[in-house]
Length: 498
Image (tube, rainbow, N blue to C red; front, side, top):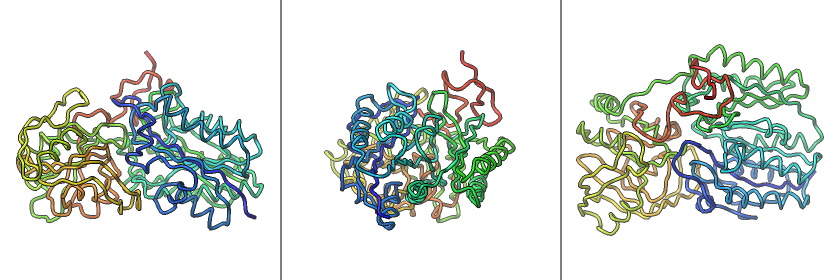
């Protein structure tokens, strides 16, 4: 039977310790996401690897009519401004109040904190539920890094989260959301059971390409059998200072007992394996020395993650710790990107290719232990910053980063952009004229997402902890509002306010 489904999306991952907020104009631009889109233009996202794209494809294949409202996402940062939250959520709630549809699908992140609300998605889902009443089914897809709250569970009929980090299954998650919504539209009742874990997990430990995360998600998939129709595990985004920050496991079953058994089984596995989720990091100097050693005798690049300056988790992508280490150790054939510095990119474009400039590059985030890199740079390449993503993540999305420049200092190439973007695929080097496969060392301002496109070409991957606003180990953050007793790292000390 053909049904009419209202669809909308509002995505933001909030690091409450980050230096800059997300305003309405950031959602208009999109940054690492497609620009703000309304109405039937949203249907063009069907070919992009984001959840709404997968949902659109699945719903259209099932013969349903879609009623698109708005889709908006912004690069992770500090809090979403009250203005941005109210304007975007207001459009969704106004459309929902018309009730000219049979069901609702929302493409959400799950870790949004606004200036006035701890739980952005919980508020939005509650507002939509109040607008549509209790009988219209509503399903939402969530990022793997969602901090899932009780209000979210109470307002939605079903929630489903990504299972990969790097997030290569975003569209697939949207399709799974459509299948859950189809069950609800057919009159099926789904019983939910959830379990909240008592410890925070560093984001580097969440990579599903390696253990223990890979094995955990294999178990998540294995639990979907018989009476259990959907299982999700969100390790959380451990940089949002509010009581419900942290990992959550949940399951939907045809009966309450089957859902409880699935959730309990995974919960006990996580408690048993807690110590395996700890992470160790290299200093910038040690990472560069090791990369130089490993790069000898291989024609594949060694990749270093500059994890504490990852703009995909709220950093500003402008710290200079890794550049200093590369230059001081005279690294050869090295490249670093993307550095967010619009004035430097503008100066390079004004000077032209071949020019030599004295610049104070980066260092504007005022991170303790970091400062601008002052030196003479050669302008090697200039571009308009436009490309199409063709890697495993965000495949099919157009990127517009504004003026981009490649600057050389010593034998190090620096890709400088006018828009913040995580270095999660090789095309982001290519728009700066850098061929990543030909480099000996690549330093990526990313934590994990880069692995999807870079591991196939890399000789080795290292993780460095240079000074940056994104604290890699959550136990080092100045928490004030976490739930009492939660451990701020695996096997760490329980949190107590004050």
